[in-house]
Amino acid sequence: MAGTASAVGALVVASTMAIGIGAVGTASFHAARAAGIADGAALAAADAATGAVSGVPCERAGEVAASGGAELAACTLTDVTATVRVRLGAGLLVAEARARAGPADSAGG
Image (tube, rainbow, N blue to C red; front, side, top):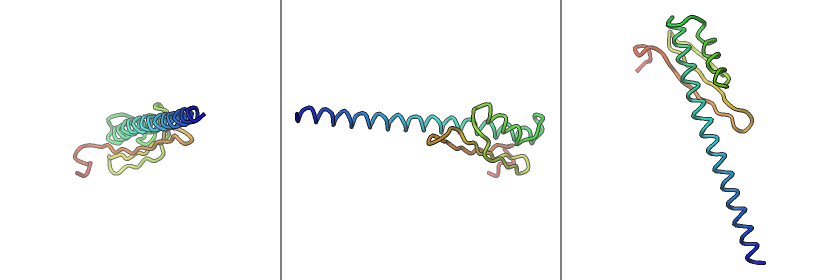
């Protein structure tokens, strides 16, 4: 019986570790994906602000975020520099990312 209890205990520990590692991996994936979507949304807003593409900057950012499956949580413009924040996921697996884009001479250093 002692051997069975030890084997069950080892199985429980291994299963718990596998679930934890899987959750960390999923969270890391969502964070990286959110960062990429935020970068694209900020670039789209900055392009619209400079006139490189047509449209309203924050609307463009929202379109890009939505096309990546994220929600635009915030969008601000300072001259032609756009700062955006996007939210991706639901429930316990929500990732947020922020990005800023604009011309090199207006980025502030």
